[in-house]
Image 1 (cartoon, one colour):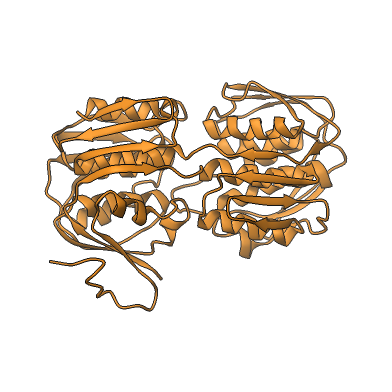
Image 2: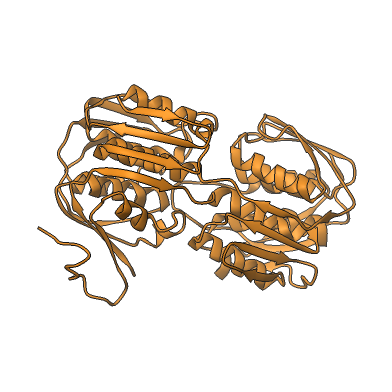
Length: 430
């Protein structure tokens, strides 16, 4: 497996361009199952999770063509309706083929999903909602067996906010007979992006981005040419990295309004951020103030930036507190950060971070996608050599992160599997 090595401490300067959003690309690629003819999707990031869902779609019979700047998908020849465990186990978003398969092809067999080990993320909300739309659902041997005639629109009220549940039901409802109302819907920008893509296919969706989404079913959807939004979590990760290390970076191809909660938090910590329509300039001298933060559903502070923020707060003066309200196991990175010298105490769903604490490089193991990003930030701050293994987690959600950091001046190097570390022209270890 690949490893990443960082020689620190680093400061970051220059410009970086944000890639397409993983959490928007995955449901939008899955939505191609709903449409007749060919769909063309642009600004798709080159990520492990994107590769996984394309393999899954190809397994189902979708014609997949990857070009330099687009992915072309046609689902007219789909003849398989099973998403097997071997293809689903590494990525929870694979469950997003369930709604489209039932809506258009009236049957689906989908393995219960895997993904990051950050806590329970049950799919019962998806299944209960599909049953209300008229699908027959059975769980057996770790698989969801679903079948239906044409789905019938109805009112769906989620017990708790679920992003993938909102997306799955919104996609299924596009081809249902009559209207569907989704109450307590997720408001994330990625949900809006999916709704925009579906509407471009001919769907009739309103209210995306609010707690109530209305979907009026249509007879059929057509292929579309659509460009996916930029990744707000990648942009937020760079915001936090520069805040932690110190520096001055222009972050391009991003929408600051989707990061308003994170920007407010960083400003309270003493970071200077200038917002433009599609870019942000972040400046930090490394003099940070301790803060208290709670993760919340959008538009609150995103759980997907919690681990990165914790790495930054090890460098803030005083005691910071993070309340993790979304996932119960999202402190897996703490033990690895403590190996670097971080002073962090976990109490139930709270993390107490004591700073400013000097970090030192250490061998580390990534446990999930966002935890791996936090370890990279820790390595950028730490003095000496940091070695991060299991970086396949990182590659699931960040496109060429180490290359982008290198352009900003970071002393960072990826060791490919089976190759020696010693590579003096790329990185030097003290």
